[in-house]
Amino acid sequence: MTSKETGLANSITTTVTDVSDGNNSDNLGLSRLAYDPAALPTAITNLTEITEALDAQITIDGTLVVTNSTNVFEDVIDGVDITAKKLHGVDDDISQISFTANNANIQVGLETFVESYNELQVLSKQLGASGESGSGPLAGDSLLRGVMGKLRQQFSEGFDIGNGKTLSLSELGVRSDRYGVLSLETEDLNEFISDNVDGVEQFFVGTDSADGFVASLKELTSFYTDSDGIIQNRIDSKTTQLDRLDDDNLAFSRRMEQLEARLYAQYNAMDLIVANLNSTSTYLMAQLDNMPGVVKQDS
Image 1 (cartoon, rainbow, N blue to C red):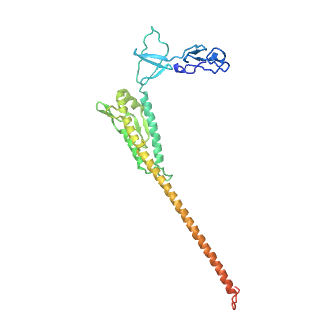
Image 2 (tube, rainbow, N blue to C red; image 1 turned 45 degrees about the vertical axis):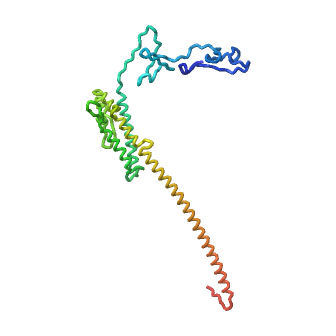
Image 3 (cartoon, rainbow, N blue to C red; image 1 turned 30 degrees about the horizontal axis):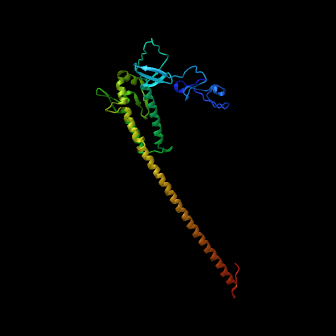
């Protein structure tokens, strides 16, 4: 038997129910397959373990010992994954790790941001459309215009990057055409990264005393999207209006039912009066026809 997963937590044990003699730990019958070294009061090792389940272990700076079920150590150092390739011998040199900055993620992140914003731009136009072909559900709504306008302002807003300088998203190569569609000029971005990557980092993440672009954008969007934000308040307000309309509709339906019942009652009463009048008229005509001296004229 072999475990599909490595590490001490994935060691194999086997327990049996030996009905032949009622003893689940002896070396007879099905008990021969029992193996549980941690069993109490005595270990059960009727099988033979060929390879012991162990955790991988590394020592950092000679003092910090870290164990893991696999040879890949994540989160030991922020942003770094360490893979142990072989067993470290006593006479082996201490392993050295070197780091280099990977700035490609800045471009990837901005490209994703530009793509997401353009999708939002298309959606906002659909929601706010107004014309002969039809209107969107938020046509003329000030909320939609407001949020899109404030988002566009963020692209030209400058954020401190140190040494008395500021930087905006548009200066990093994010451009907007006349239709509001964003694009990324990678040459401008890479040039700025090459000249001042620390400034680019500060532009995005800010400092302890001042927010960067990311925090500022998050604060703006949270104002609209939080559970107590403007959009949720609008949803709650519309839901309340719908509930009130449902109540009004129900009350109106009850009034219509009452009116219908009253009109039916009046109709039936009038129909009964007409029937009585017709009966009375027929009776009177019959009496008149039978009176002496009355001559009935043919029509």
